Image 1 (cartoon, rainbow, N blue to C red):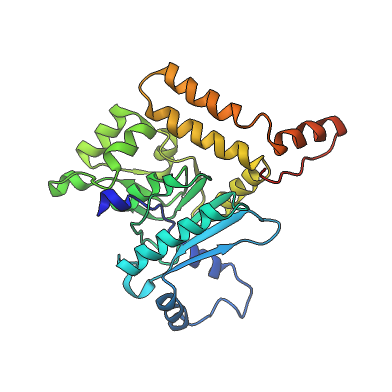
Image 2 (image 1 turned 30 degrees about the vertical axis):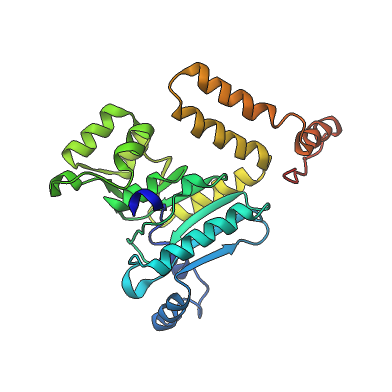
Length: 277
């Protein structure tokens, strides 16, 4: 099952943070009500409104069973990913969990052509870290703890950890973390390239949204092709082949409407208005 479904990145503590910052009178929504809603919809796909147009939020919400895997959950995840791919207005996906400290496996977000951002508050251990590794970017709260402890259980990280981790932080560092099962904090994760940012606890989602806003300002076709060039280029054996991948992606952008709009906007000294065409 793990080879066919791959990994889904996750976010912990997102719902708690939002409730804590809600206006008086709104933060006391009964937990029972939240659980009832989660039972009806184990996966929620939502478009953020202006000024965050183009940002989608994919939330796992089965608090009554701590986001336990079920065929329904995986089917909903796969359906949500298909909807994202079919949405021409989608530019960035934030993946969230409504259950603090809980992660969940599902379809591989690497398959998405748009950037994905994982937000990590608290523990991201074993499968939890493997989930986050499948996203393009990782944002950690300073309380985050990351590690792959599977060798202590006489197994290996078998949901992508042995392959994704060395591609992100290098083979030698990845071997150390996997062989020893050692945990690292958010500061060390940033230093070794495992995470992009470490921010105060509870502020990881805000930082992720800040990055998403910056990405949505750029040409959406350019961002998609940049992701494709990086991901596919990293998979080939030599630099010549990697540069060929880059060249192919570049050629596909030269005569797009967005490229022409960018040139016109520069000449007219205004901000470009991209349409993704």
